[in-house]
Image 1 (cartoon, rainbow, N blue to C red):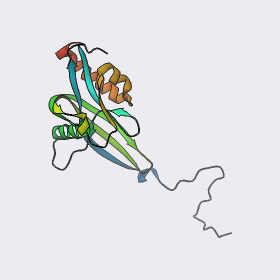
Image 2: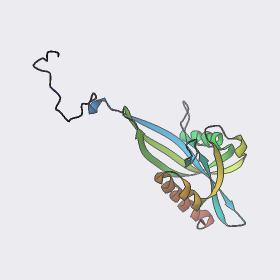
Image 3: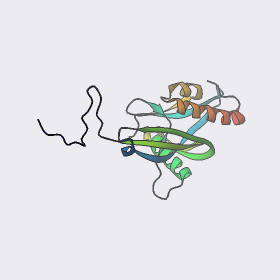
Length: 171
């Protein structure tokens, strides 16, 4: 048994000893950009959007991180094209989705800027390998399929913008 110095505390029995103080938890900020690619199905009057599926089987919207010197709208166009295989044109900005994530060592506050986008060409067959599936989904179905509530809320905002153009989106 070692000798304890007079200024060394003895841990209380039944308490958990931590090695990190709250000040050691780092916090960061991340920014990304993406899009809600949409089309109107003439025969049904339905609005469809593009969803991507992660290897963890989560449905989401295409988005990604800016490259050096890239503006957010440029990031959105590039990332959507890479992740879906579609060429797209920028439309109206929907808004910013904010959330936090991280583990024991770091907490990240993330802001993802989203725009409405329309397809101008390309094919899902050309999507990158970051996602295992890319598909057109009815807007109402997409709101139920996405894995996170904040994504569904962003889709509700997109639906409100689209309502002014094509009429109320059908589920």
